[in-house]
Amino acid sequence: MIDHTQFQDKKIAYHTLGCKLNFAETSSIVRSLHEAGFRKAKPGEQADLCIINTCSVTDMADKKCRQAITRFIRLHPTAFVIVTGCYAQLKPNEIASIRGVDLVLGANDKFNIELYINHLEKKLTTQIYNTKINTVENFYPSCSSDDRTRFFLKVQDGCDYYCTYCTIPYARGKSRSGTIAQTVELTKQAINEGAKEIVLTGVNTGDFGKNNGESFFELIQAIDKIEANVRYRISSIEPNLLTDEIILFVANSKHFAPHFHIPLQSGSNEVLQLMKRRYTRELFAQKIQTIKTILPHAFIGVDVIVGTRGEKAAYFEDARQFIESLDISQLHVFSYSERAGTKALEIEQPVSLQDKRIRSEILHAVSDKKIKEFYLSQIGKQADVLWESTKKGKCMHGFTENYIRVIAPYNKDLINTLQTVTLMGFSEEDNTFALTVK
Image 1 (tube, one colour):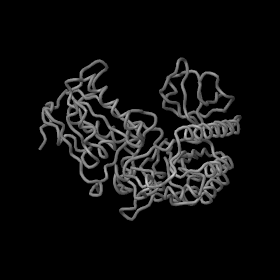
Image 2: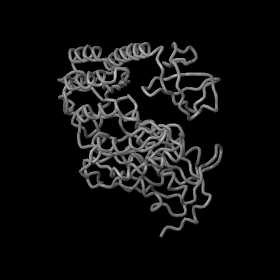
Image 3: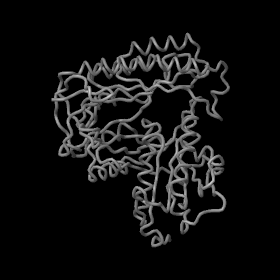
Image 4: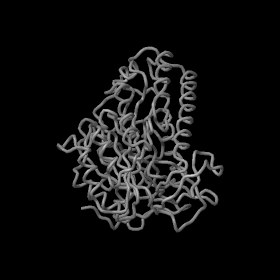
Protein backbone atom coordinates (compact mmCIF):
# COMPACT_ATOMS: atom_id res chain seq x y z
CA MET A 1 0.00 0.00 0.00
CA ILE A 2 1.40 3.39 -1.02
CA ASP A 3 1.36 6.08 1.68
CA HIS A 4 -0.17 9.03 -0.13
CA THR A 5 0.07 11.32 2.90
CA GLN A 6 3.72 11.93 2.07
CA PHE A 7 2.65 13.56 -1.21
CA GLN A 8 0.06 15.98 0.18
CA ASP A 9 0.55 19.45 -1.27
CA LYS A 10 3.78 18.45 -3.00
CA LYS A 11 4.31 20.47 -6.15
CA ILE A 12 4.74 18.93 -9.60
CA ALA A 13 6.05 20.44 -12.83
CA TYR A 14 5.89 18.56 -16.12
CA HIS A 15 6.73 18.91 -19.79
CA THR A 16 5.74 16.89 -22.86
CA LEU A 17 7.54 16.61 -26.16
CA GLY A 18 6.39 14.96 -29.37
CA CYS A 19 3.06 13.60 -30.51
CA LYS A 20 -0.48 14.05 -29.22
CA LEU A 21 -0.28 10.52 -27.85
CA ASN A 22 2.42 11.72 -25.48
CA PHE A 23 0.25 14.63 -24.36
CA ALA A 24 -2.63 12.26 -23.61
CA GLU A 25 -0.33 10.02 -21.61
CA THR A 26 1.19 12.89 -19.63
CA SER A 27 -2.31 14.07 -18.76
CA SER A 28 -3.21 10.64 -17.34
CA ILE A 29 0.07 10.38 -15.41
CA VAL A 30 -0.39 13.81 -13.87
CA ARG A 31 -4.02 13.10 -13.05
CA SER A 32 -3.03 10.03 -11.02
CA LEU A 33 -0.41 12.08 -9.17
CA HIS A 34 -2.97 14.79 -8.40
CA GLU A 35 -5.19 12.08 -6.91
CA ALA A 36 -2.21 11.02 -4.78
CA GLY A 37 -1.93 14.54 -3.32
CA PHE A 38 0.34 16.46 -5.69
CA ARG A 39 -0.64 19.85 -7.07
CA LYS A 40 0.68 21.68 -10.13
CA ALA A 41 3.52 24.10 -9.37
CA LYS A 42 2.59 27.71 -10.05
CA PRO A 43 4.85 29.89 -12.22
CA GLY A 44 7.94 30.77 -10.22
CA GLU A 45 7.37 28.04 -7.62
CA GLN A 46 10.02 25.41 -6.97
CA ALA A 47 8.60 21.98 -7.82
CA ASP A 48 9.17 18.92 -5.65
CA LEU A 49 8.76 16.58 -8.64
CA CYS A 50 9.53 17.15 -12.31
CA ILE A 51 8.40 14.81 -15.09
CA ILE A 52 9.62 15.11 -18.68
CA ASN A 53 7.79 12.88 -21.20
CA THR A 54 10.05 12.54 -24.21
CA CYS A 55 10.00 11.89 -27.96
CA SER A 56 12.66 10.24 -30.10
CA VAL A 57 11.34 10.29 -33.64
CA THR A 58 14.41 12.15 -34.98
CA ASP A 59 17.87 13.26 -33.87
CA MET A 60 16.44 16.76 -33.46
CA ALA A 61 13.76 15.36 -31.15
CA ASP A 62 16.48 13.78 -28.99
CA LYS A 63 18.29 17.12 -28.85
CA LYS A 64 15.12 18.97 -27.81
CA CYS A 65 14.55 16.38 -25.09
CA ARG A 66 18.03 16.90 -23.66
CA GLN A 67 17.51 20.65 -23.73
CA ALA A 68 14.16 20.34 -21.93
CA ILE A 69 15.65 18.06 -19.27
CA THR A 70 18.55 20.40 -18.51
CA ARG A 71 16.22 23.42 -18.48
CA PHE A 72 13.93 21.79 -15.91
CA ILE A 73 16.89 20.78 -13.75
CA ARG A 74 18.12 24.37 -13.86
CA LEU A 75 14.68 25.79 -13.00
CA HIS A 76 14.00 23.24 -10.24
CA PRO A 77 17.45 22.28 -8.85
CA THR A 78 16.10 20.52 -5.74
CA ALA A 79 13.28 18.62 -7.47
CA PHE A 80 13.17 14.86 -7.97
CA VAL A 81 13.50 14.53 -11.76
CA ILE A 82 11.89 11.71 -13.76
CA VAL A 83 12.37 11.24 -17.49
CA THR A 84 10.09 8.87 -19.40
CA GLY A 85 8.72 8.37 -22.92
CA CYS A 86 10.25 7.09 -26.16
CA TYR A 87 13.70 8.64 -25.68
CA ALA A 88 13.84 7.06 -22.21
CA GLN A 89 13.02 3.64 -23.67
CA LEU A 90 15.50 3.86 -26.53
CA LYS A 91 18.44 5.65 -24.89
CA PRO A 92 18.17 5.41 -21.09
CA ASN A 93 21.91 5.56 -20.49
CA GLU A 94 22.21 8.74 -22.52
CA ILE A 95 19.62 10.36 -20.27
CA ALA A 96 21.19 8.94 -17.11
CA SER A 97 24.42 10.73 -18.00
CA ILE A 98 22.68 14.10 -17.51
CA ARG A 99 23.51 15.35 -14.02
CA GLY A 100 20.38 15.93 -11.96
CA VAL A 101 18.19 13.17 -13.44
CA ASP A 102 17.03 10.84 -10.66
CA LEU A 103 14.92 8.27 -12.50
CA VAL A 104 14.54 7.02 -16.07
CA LEU A 105 11.38 5.01 -16.76
CA GLY A 106 10.82 3.02 -19.94
CA ALA A 107 7.58 2.13 -21.72
CA ASN A 108 6.43 -0.47 -19.20
CA ASP A 109 6.91 1.69 -16.11
CA LYS A 110 5.81 5.23 -16.94
CA PHE A 111 2.27 4.70 -15.68
CA ASN A 112 3.47 3.40 -12.30
CA ILE A 113 5.50 6.40 -11.17
CA GLU A 114 4.18 6.25 -7.60
CA LEU A 115 5.90 2.88 -7.15
CA TYR A 116 9.30 4.40 -7.82
CA ILE A 117 9.30 7.56 -5.71
CA ASN A 118 10.04 7.48 -2.00
CA HIS A 119 9.89 10.79 -0.15
CA LEU A 120 11.25 12.48 -3.29
CA GLU A 121 14.84 12.23 -2.12
CA LYS A 122 17.49 13.12 -4.72
CA LYS A 123 19.60 10.16 -5.86
CA LEU A 124 23.37 9.96 -5.86
CA THR A 125 23.17 7.99 -9.08
CA THR A 126 20.41 7.82 -11.67
CA GLN A 127 18.17 4.76 -11.45
CA ILE A 128 16.96 3.16 -14.69
CA TYR A 129 13.90 0.92 -15.07
CA ASN A 130 13.71 -0.18 -18.66
CA THR A 131 11.99 -3.43 -19.64
CA LYS A 132 12.79 -5.09 -22.97
CA ILE A 133 10.25 -3.68 -25.39
CA ASN A 134 9.16 -7.09 -26.75
CA THR A 135 7.86 -7.98 -23.27
CA VAL A 136 5.62 -4.89 -22.96
CA GLU A 137 2.00 -6.01 -23.27
CA ASN A 138 -0.13 -3.76 -21.05
CA PHE A 139 -2.28 -1.04 -22.56
CA TYR A 140 -2.89 2.10 -20.53
CA PRO A 141 -5.79 4.22 -21.83
CA SER A 142 -5.15 7.96 -21.64
CA CYS A 143 -6.92 11.20 -22.42
CA SER A 144 -5.53 14.73 -22.37
CA SER A 145 -7.61 17.24 -20.46
CA ASP A 146 -5.41 20.32 -20.19
CA ASP A 147 -7.29 21.94 -23.06
CA ARG A 148 -11.02 22.01 -22.35
CA THR A 149 -11.84 22.46 -26.03
CA ARG A 150 -10.10 19.56 -27.73
CA PHE A 151 -9.28 16.28 -26.01
CA PHE A 152 -6.89 13.63 -27.34
CA LEU A 153 -8.05 10.11 -26.55
CA LYS A 154 -5.47 7.34 -26.78
CA VAL A 155 -7.21 4.29 -28.24
CA GLN A 156 -4.17 2.26 -29.35
CA ASP A 157 -0.44 1.92 -28.69
CA GLY A 158 2.54 0.25 -30.36
CA CYS A 159 3.14 -0.86 -33.93
CA ASP A 160 3.88 -4.16 -35.70
CA TYR A 161 4.91 -2.65 -39.04
CA TYR A 162 8.68 -2.11 -38.62
CA CYS A 163 9.09 0.35 -41.48
CA THR A 164 12.78 0.62 -42.27
CA TYR A 165 13.16 4.26 -41.21
CA CYS A 166 11.20 4.11 -37.94
CA THR A 167 12.12 3.45 -34.28
CA ILE A 168 8.58 3.55 -32.89
CA PRO A 169 8.15 -0.26 -32.59
CA TYR A 170 11.38 -0.31 -30.56
CA ALA A 171 10.17 2.54 -28.35
CA ARG A 172 6.52 1.53 -27.85
CA GLY A 173 6.35 -2.19 -28.55
CA LYS A 174 3.76 -4.27 -30.32
CA SER A 175 0.29 -3.11 -31.28
CA ARG A 176 -2.26 -3.27 -28.47
CA SER A 177 -5.39 -1.50 -27.29
CA GLY A 178 -8.16 -1.60 -24.73
CA THR A 179 -11.67 -2.82 -25.42
CA ILE A 180 -14.49 -0.95 -27.09
CA ALA A 181 -16.39 -0.85 -23.78
CA GLN A 182 -13.42 0.70 -21.95
CA THR A 183 -12.86 3.25 -24.71
CA VAL A 184 -16.53 4.27 -24.79
CA GLU A 185 -16.44 4.87 -21.02
CA LEU A 186 -13.33 7.02 -21.36
CA THR A 187 -15.04 8.96 -24.14
CA LYS A 188 -18.07 9.60 -21.92
CA GLN A 189 -15.77 10.77 -19.13
CA ALA A 190 -14.11 13.29 -21.44
CA ILE A 191 -17.53 14.58 -22.55
CA ASN A 192 -18.58 14.96 -18.91
CA GLU A 193 -15.42 17.01 -18.33
CA GLY A 194 -16.46 19.45 -21.05
CA ALA A 195 -14.89 18.08 -24.24
CA LYS A 196 -16.57 19.39 -27.37
CA GLU A 197 -14.13 17.71 -29.72
CA ILE A 198 -12.27 14.43 -29.20
CA VAL A 199 -9.43 13.20 -31.40
CA LEU A 200 -8.95 9.42 -31.50
CA THR A 201 -5.22 8.88 -31.49
CA GLY A 202 -2.66 6.09 -31.38
CA VAL A 203 0.60 4.94 -32.90
CA ASN A 204 -1.26 2.91 -35.51
CA THR A 205 -4.84 3.94 -34.83
CA GLY A 206 -6.48 1.71 -37.42
CA ASP A 207 -4.97 -1.34 -35.71
CA PHE A 208 -7.34 -0.91 -32.75
CA GLY A 209 -8.68 -4.23 -31.45
CA LYS A 210 -6.06 -6.38 -33.15
CA ASN A 211 -5.17 -8.01 -29.82
CA ASN A 212 -8.73 -8.76 -28.70
CA GLY A 213 -10.77 -9.57 -31.81
CA GLU A 214 -12.43 -6.15 -32.14
CA SER A 215 -11.92 -3.56 -34.88
CA PHE A 216 -11.49 0.17 -35.33
CA PHE A 217 -14.65 0.28 -37.45
CA GLU A 218 -16.64 -1.26 -34.59
CA LEU A 219 -15.11 1.28 -32.21
CA ILE A 220 -16.15 4.36 -34.17
CA GLN A 221 -19.64 2.90 -34.59
CA ALA A 222 -19.94 2.52 -30.82
CA ILE A 223 -18.59 6.00 -30.05
CA ASP A 224 -20.89 7.62 -32.60
CA LYS A 225 -23.91 6.29 -30.69
CA ILE A 226 -23.09 8.38 -27.60
CA GLU A 227 -25.74 11.08 -27.29
CA ALA A 228 -23.84 14.32 -26.75
CA ASN A 229 -23.02 17.66 -28.34
CA VAL A 230 -19.54 16.58 -29.42
CA ARG A 231 -17.61 15.86 -32.56
CA TYR A 232 -14.81 13.38 -33.20
CA ARG A 233 -11.77 13.34 -35.43
CA ILE A 234 -9.70 10.36 -36.49
CA SER A 235 -5.99 11.05 -36.18
CA SER A 236 -3.40 9.58 -38.53
CA ILE A 237 -4.57 6.29 -40.03
CA GLU A 238 -2.62 4.04 -42.42
CA PRO A 239 -4.05 3.98 -45.97
CA ASN A 240 -4.23 0.18 -45.97
CA LEU A 241 -6.33 0.32 -42.78
CA LEU A 242 -8.61 3.13 -43.96
CA THR A 243 -11.35 0.95 -45.39
CA ASP A 244 -14.13 2.15 -47.66
CA GLU A 245 -16.64 1.27 -44.94
CA ILE A 246 -14.87 3.65 -42.55
CA ILE A 247 -14.96 6.45 -45.13
CA LEU A 248 -18.65 5.83 -45.85
CA PHE A 249 -19.44 5.69 -42.15
CA VAL A 250 -17.74 9.05 -41.50
CA ALA A 251 -19.76 10.55 -44.35
CA ASN A 252 -23.04 9.46 -42.74
CA SER A 253 -22.18 9.67 -39.03
CA LYS A 254 -23.69 12.05 -36.51
CA HIS A 255 -20.45 13.15 -34.91
CA PHE A 256 -17.36 12.27 -36.96
CA ALA A 257 -15.73 15.16 -38.80
CA PRO A 258 -14.95 15.00 -42.55
CA HIS A 259 -11.23 15.15 -41.85
CA PHE A 260 -8.62 12.52 -42.67
CA HIS A 261 -4.91 12.44 -41.87
CA ILE A 262 -3.23 9.75 -43.96
CA PRO A 263 0.52 9.03 -44.09
CA LEU A 264 1.82 8.60 -47.62
CA GLN A 265 5.54 8.98 -46.76
CA SER A 266 6.54 8.82 -50.43
CA GLY A 267 4.79 9.16 -53.77
CA SER A 268 7.30 6.79 -55.37
CA ASN A 269 6.53 3.07 -55.36
CA GLU A 270 10.26 2.32 -55.43
CA VAL A 271 10.80 4.35 -52.26
CA LEU A 272 7.71 2.84 -50.60
CA GLN A 273 9.29 -0.56 -51.18
CA LEU A 274 12.56 0.58 -49.62
CA MET A 275 10.55 1.84 -46.64
CA LYS A 276 8.69 -1.49 -46.34
CA ARG A 277 5.35 0.31 -46.42
CA ARG A 278 2.25 -1.88 -46.84
CA TYR A 279 0.58 -0.21 -49.81
CA THR A 280 1.29 1.24 -53.23
CA ARG A 281 0.68 4.77 -54.39
CA GLU A 282 -2.15 3.43 -56.56
CA LEU A 283 -3.99 2.26 -53.44
CA PHE A 284 -3.34 5.63 -51.80
CA ALA A 285 -4.75 7.49 -54.81
CA GLN A 286 -7.81 5.25 -54.71
CA LYS A 287 -8.44 6.19 -51.07
CA ILE A 288 -8.22 9.90 -51.88
CA GLN A 289 -10.62 9.50 -54.79
CA THR A 290 -13.10 7.57 -52.64
CA ILE A 291 -13.05 10.25 -49.94
CA LYS A 292 -13.50 13.10 -52.40
CA THR A 293 -16.30 11.30 -54.25
CA ILE A 294 -18.30 10.77 -51.06
CA LEU A 295 -17.11 13.85 -49.13
CA PRO A 296 -15.96 16.53 -51.60
CA HIS A 297 -15.53 19.08 -48.78
CA ALA A 298 -13.36 16.78 -46.62
CA PHE A 299 -9.98 17.99 -45.43
CA ILE A 300 -7.16 15.53 -46.21
CA GLY A 301 -3.77 15.99 -44.57
CA VAL A 302 -0.88 13.84 -45.81
CA ASP A 303 2.49 12.98 -44.20
CA VAL A 304 5.52 12.85 -46.50
CA ILE A 305 9.20 12.12 -45.78
CA VAL A 306 11.92 13.50 -48.06
CA GLY A 307 15.52 12.41 -48.34
CA THR A 308 15.29 8.80 -47.21
CA ARG A 309 18.22 6.59 -48.17
CA GLY A 310 17.76 5.39 -51.73
CA GLU A 311 15.51 8.31 -52.77
CA LYS A 312 17.13 9.08 -56.12
CA ALA A 313 16.43 12.43 -57.75
CA ALA A 314 14.24 10.69 -60.35
CA TYR A 315 12.24 8.98 -57.58
CA PHE A 316 11.65 12.30 -55.84
CA GLU A 317 10.53 14.01 -59.05
CA ASP A 318 8.16 11.11 -59.76
CA ALA A 319 6.80 11.43 -56.20
CA ARG A 320 6.35 15.20 -56.54
CA GLN A 321 4.32 14.84 -59.72
CA PHE A 322 2.15 12.17 -58.11
CA ILE A 323 1.54 14.27 -54.99
CA GLU A 324 0.62 17.32 -57.06
CA SER A 325 -1.98 15.20 -58.88
CA LEU A 326 -3.77 14.29 -55.63
CA ASP A 327 -6.86 16.19 -54.48
CA ILE A 328 -5.52 16.73 -50.97
CA SER A 329 -5.57 19.72 -48.63
CA GLN A 330 -2.18 19.90 -46.91
CA LEU A 331 1.20 18.17 -46.63
CA HIS A 332 3.15 17.57 -43.44
CA VAL A 333 6.72 17.38 -44.73
CA PHE A 334 9.49 15.72 -42.72
CA SER A 335 13.15 15.35 -43.61
CA TYR A 336 14.54 11.87 -43.08
CA SER A 337 16.65 11.46 -39.97
CA GLU A 338 18.91 8.44 -39.59
CA ARG A 339 18.09 6.38 -36.50
CA ALA A 340 20.37 3.79 -34.95
CA GLY A 341 19.09 0.23 -35.17
CA THR A 342 16.82 0.77 -38.17
CA LYS A 343 17.03 -1.24 -41.40
CA ALA A 344 17.20 1.94 -43.46
CA LEU A 345 20.88 2.26 -42.55
CA GLU A 346 21.54 -0.82 -44.69
CA ILE A 347 20.26 1.00 -47.81
CA GLU A 348 22.92 2.60 -49.98
CA GLN A 349 22.78 6.08 -51.51
CA PRO A 350 22.21 8.48 -48.61
CA VAL A 351 20.75 11.87 -49.60
CA SER A 352 22.77 14.99 -48.81
CA LEU A 353 21.52 17.58 -46.33
CA GLN A 354 21.35 20.14 -49.11
CA ASP A 355 19.17 17.90 -51.28
CA LYS A 356 16.93 17.13 -48.30
CA ARG A 357 16.47 20.85 -47.71
CA ILE A 358 15.69 21.54 -51.36
CA ARG A 359 13.18 18.69 -51.58
CA SER A 360 11.53 19.82 -48.36
CA GLU A 361 11.16 23.36 -49.70
CA ILE A 362 9.64 22.04 -52.93
CA LEU A 363 6.99 20.03 -51.12
CA HIS A 364 6.27 22.82 -48.64
CA ALA A 365 5.50 25.01 -51.68
CA VAL A 366 3.18 22.29 -53.00
CA SER A 367 1.48 22.19 -49.60
CA ASP A 368 0.95 25.96 -49.51
CA LYS A 369 -0.66 25.80 -52.93
CA LYS A 370 -2.90 22.89 -51.93
CA ILE A 371 -4.18 24.45 -48.72
CA LYS A 372 -4.84 27.81 -50.36
CA GLU A 373 -6.83 26.11 -53.12
CA PHE A 374 -8.82 24.15 -50.54
CA TYR A 375 -9.61 27.24 -48.48
CA LEU A 376 -10.66 29.15 -51.61
CA SER A 377 -13.05 26.32 -52.52
CA GLN A 378 -14.83 26.72 -49.18
CA ILE A 379 -15.37 30.51 -49.22
CA GLY A 380 -19.07 31.37 -49.12
CA LYS A 381 -20.07 28.07 -47.52
CA GLN A 382 -21.55 27.56 -44.06
CA ALA A 383 -19.69 25.56 -41.45
CA ASP A 384 -19.71 24.81 -37.73
CA VAL A 385 -16.70 26.22 -35.91
CA LEU A 386 -15.55 25.26 -32.43
CA TRP A 387 -14.05 28.38 -30.86
CA GLU A 388 -10.88 27.78 -28.88
CA SER A 389 -9.45 29.57 -25.87
CA THR A 390 -6.24 30.60 -27.62
CA LYS A 391 -6.17 34.38 -27.88
CA LYS A 392 -3.85 36.37 -30.12
CA GLY A 393 -4.21 40.07 -29.51
CA LYS A 394 -7.88 40.89 -30.00
CA CYS A 395 -8.68 37.70 -31.95
CA MET A 396 -9.76 34.14 -31.26
CA HIS A 397 -9.57 31.21 -33.60
CA GLY A 398 -11.24 27.88 -34.12
CA PHE A 399 -11.63 25.05 -36.60
CA THR A 400 -14.57 24.01 -38.74
CA GLU A 401 -15.63 20.38 -38.97
CA ASN A 402 -13.47 20.06 -42.11
CA TYR A 403 -10.49 21.60 -40.35
CA ILE A 404 -10.46 25.08 -41.80
CA ARG A 405 -8.83 27.50 -39.39
CA VAL A 406 -10.98 30.58 -38.88
CA ILE A 407 -10.42 33.83 -37.00
CA ALA A 408 -12.78 36.37 -35.43
CA PRO A 409 -12.82 39.14 -32.80
CA TYR A 410 -12.37 37.65 -29.33
CA ASN A 411 -15.60 36.83 -27.47
CA LYS A 412 -15.12 34.87 -24.25
CA ASP A 413 -18.77 33.76 -24.27
CA LEU A 414 -18.17 31.78 -27.46
CA ILE A 415 -15.12 29.86 -26.24
CA ASN A 416 -15.70 26.08 -26.25
CA THR A 417 -18.98 26.45 -28.13
CA LEU A 418 -19.99 25.44 -31.64
CA GLN A 419 -21.24 28.23 -33.87
CA THR A 420 -22.56 28.09 -37.42
CA VAL A 421 -20.74 30.66 -39.55
CA THR A 422 -20.30 31.68 -43.17
CA LEU A 423 -16.72 31.43 -44.41
CA MET A 424 -15.34 34.66 -45.85
CA GLY A 425 -11.96 35.68 -47.28
CA PHE A 426 -8.41 35.16 -46.06
CA SER A 427 -7.48 36.80 -42.79
CA GLU A 428 -4.84 39.53 -42.69
CA GLU A 429 -4.58 39.35 -38.88
CA ASP A 430 -2.48 36.20 -38.78
CA ASN A 431 0.61 34.86 -40.51
CA THR A 432 -0.95 31.41 -40.95
CA PHE A 433 -3.73 30.33 -43.28
CA ALA A 434 -7.11 31.35 -41.82
CA LEU A 435 -10.47 32.57 -43.05
CA THR A 436 -12.65 35.26 -41.60
CA VAL A 437 -16.28 34.48 -40.79
CA LYS A 438 -19.67 36.14 -40.83
